[in-house]
Structure formats: structure tokens, C-alpha cells
Amino acid sequence: MHVVVNAAMSADGKLSTRRREQVVISGEADFRRVDELRASVDAVMVGVGTVLADNPSLTVDDSDLVAERDQRGDSPQPARVVADSHARTPPDARVLDGAAETYVLVAEEEPREHRQTLEDAGATVVVAGENRVELPDALDQLEAHGVEALMVEGGGELIFSLFADDLVDELSVFVAPKIIGGRDAPTLADGDGFVRDFPELELAGVERIDDGVLLEYDC
Image 1 (spheres, one colour):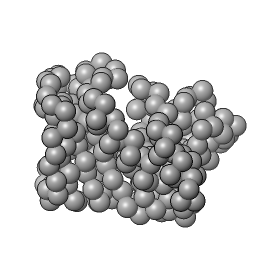
Image 2 (cartoon, helix red, strand yellow):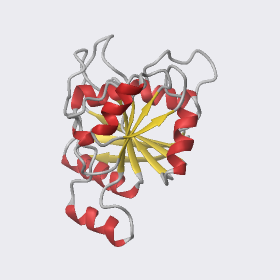
Image 3 (cartoon, one colour):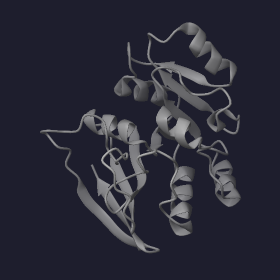
Image 4 (cartoon, one colour):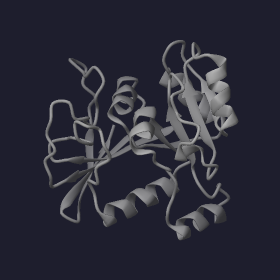
């Protein structure tokens, strides 16, 4: 599986404020780039924290891009994937609106009735890991479902875990000309953090978009 992490952050590396509320970081030109990237993959993935904070749809907005997917034999929309060890995704979340297939990754210890609630809401539940989602196993199962190209949109805990498991192939980051600050504000890669064996990145591209900059790395 090919995994692309995409994110927008402030110049000081924050994805949001300390309140973890949705913040508009990039503009129309970057929104278009993200829409094109979504249209190019088999599935779009976020952590449950992003679902709870932002309630995103994770769908392609441009009807022309949707039509192009259909013409090449893909589903009109990429699948949605939520990493949700303890099945906290609300049944009325936008990722379960039926606009695209949605996989929810949960841990084995999560009670069956919680999984059933998600299934009743239209999700395909993927069990991977005993008490938290084991991403290598989960991605293998997604690949068996036909997901060969995966775009990850956050949040920081999920992105850190993917890097920790050496599962990231590309990283694209839009850096906005603003400062958010706050020691408790989420960053690109949260989690425990690395103290050694830091993931090495190779700069593959730099592009100015609006008043920000897009940095592209091979991992």
C-alpha cells in the first residue's frame, strides 16, 4: 500500500489551537490541491479525534473530479477510513452519511455491541489489535479490501503512529503564514515523540501556494 500523509499547519507547526477547534489554515488554491489528491486515491483516513473535533465528510467536492473517477472505473468517491480503537465515532457523523464506503478500525477488546452500532450506521468495521488499533495489520486488511493508495489527513496522533510504524511513503505539508502557538495545541506528529531513530525525509518539492508554501517529502 502507498500511504500519503497530507496536512496544513501554521508556521510554528500547529494543526489547530489548544482548544482543538477547526481552524482554516489554507486557502482556495490549497483546497483545490487537496481535492485533487483525494480524487487520486482509493481511501482517505483520519483519526477519531478529527471526526469528533471537525466532523469532516472526507469526500471529493469537485464534480468534474468525481466524474473522472467514475470514468476510470473507480467508485465516485474514495472510501473513508477512521482509526477508532474504542468505537467513539458517532453514528450520525458525516463520514457515515452513505456518500462513500466507510471503514472504522477498532480494537479487538471493544464490546461487540459498540461495533454493531457502527455497522448499523453503515460502517464496515475492521478489527486490528487487542486494545488499540495495530496499524500494520489494519492497513493489510484495508489492502485486502482493495485499498492500494491511502491518503491520511490527520490528526497528529495518527500521523505519529504511522511514522512510528514506518508506514508513510510521502508527506505533503502546506505551511501557512500564521502563528497559532500553545504548548497544548496539536502538532503534525503528536504521540509520544521520537527520542532516537528519527524518521528521515527527502525533500522532493517546494511550491508557493497563495501566501504559504507546500513542502513535499519522500519518506
